[in-house]
Image (cartoon, rainbow, N blue to C red; front, side, top):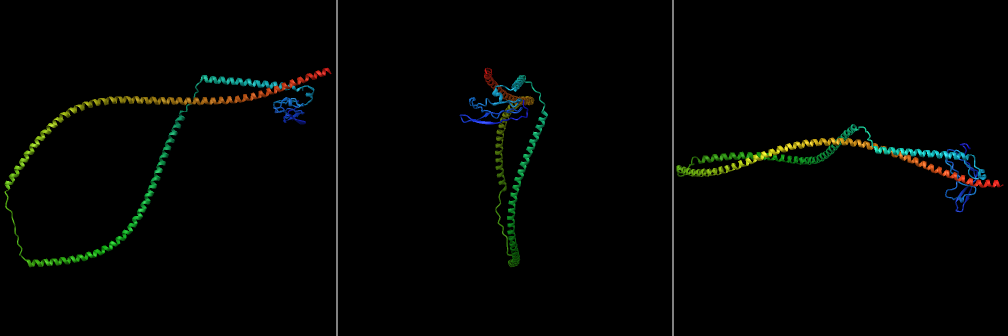
Length: 410
């Protein structure tokens, strides 16, 4: 046996071109497989070439796994020419058998694990044991309180934003009003300047008019003085030549006039008294009729009021009953909602736990499937190696029989 540090060696290589133009390498070297490494011979025949295209010096390709711990000689070595196997062949076959047994044990163990997991999954699905979930109600209450506070804060922020926008709009309005008032002030100041000029002009006119009034007053005093002098002069000239005369109408008989007026008023008074008595009689009859009808209406209204009171009392009693029923139903609905919300939270927790378990089981199944695929690949590779060794053994046996026969005859 070679050591673990012995490298793979090829003494020489030659290439032969087959009829279809494909270049292949003929093996005339000794190749050793390093343990614990994938040491497949470099001079392998491509898998797409038939066995008839192989050169005479290379019997078959060597497909050895990387975990082999014995050397393998391939090519035109002495043991191939003599038809004798090396002493390491038994160890190699024993190693391959051990690897195959280990692989089968791993496959059997994985099958048992898969069966056990399937049984556990089936039992879990059949039993459906409810899991006890922790009580998160206090955390839910805290979260609801915080959510309410957040909503209140958002509402306050919205109100503040609205107030800020309103303040901005009010400031814009006041700014526009200030600008308009400023323009009005400038116009008023301009008008005041013009009015001041007019006031100065009017003051001058007033002074002129006051001077003119003073002159007119002086003229009036002069005229009054002259008028009094003329009146006195005329009175002195006329003296006592004035006389007064009175014209009187004839007298009227007042007693006769008063008697006529008294008769007229008495006639009018009698007519008015008669009309008033007739009107009073008519109104009295109408009032009596109205009183009778009003009494009947009053009695009907009282009866209707009593019926309405009874109906109102009955409706009030029914309303109280309906209110009590509504309150009881609301309490029942609140209790039912609380109960079902608790159950829903528990079921949600159970669903989350089951989903987590299913996710874990899926992960385990995927991992086991990957391991199973790896083992299947290993199995296929080992079967390929076993078939390769079987073919090598059969070919060597078939070549050894004629060689022994020739030796016996010789």
